[in-house]
Length: 148
Length: 171
Image (cartoon, rainbow over all chains, first blue to last red; front, side, top):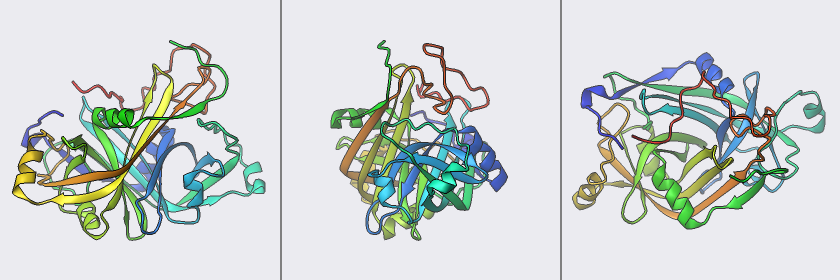
């Protein structure tokens, strides 16, 4: 970890919804965090595609994540460039829903799961909220959230 | 380098491998429940002598949430293009806002400098209660960076110039 000058610290700027969606479209892997009452969230990386504003990914019965369906979940992507010292993070919040066979059939989704197994189930996370932060190198105000 | 044909497979990463990933990665993600929803915050982190995960933060959402619900998850993941695999390590543990002077002095020696704006005067330590890791070996004919696209077998992995460079080797 490199020491950087105080006046060279990054400024954290909020990204608007459109910017978040553009960034989401470029990415192919994100992290799904599923809530579980009284426990720590479960976090698993999944590859995904964006369908409109919704996150689509494949899964399998038996996945930890699947057991947590119909509960609030978050989907997060980020990217950091340590040389240019910029980065961003986007968080999509919603409740994942398993698509029915009928719904899945109508979708031309080019989504090959990495993990083995059938993974025939398609999951849709319709965003209730999309938020994002951009981090750049200039002095300024303190972000109230926990980013970096 | 082995050429892997056919289906992908999952391997569990042993504890020593999980810890190595946790030490090598610069950025991890803290996940916790905030108002009933899981939230994920990227943080730069270090491991202390006891193998606990340490990060710095300002007063704000993350610290407020920690005080109310200290059970958190911490995740690191990555793609190894050489080995053609994706991996992730998930830590579940109790997060504690470090307040005692002796503890703080020890943590300051970790040279954990905040990367983002703010003084980040608060140190948080996550004591792991469970560490699990898994890796997914992806066949050569698939491009690990773009798994939805069929890549030619043995073809060089495409660079994607529209993305920020993902360079995990810290100078």
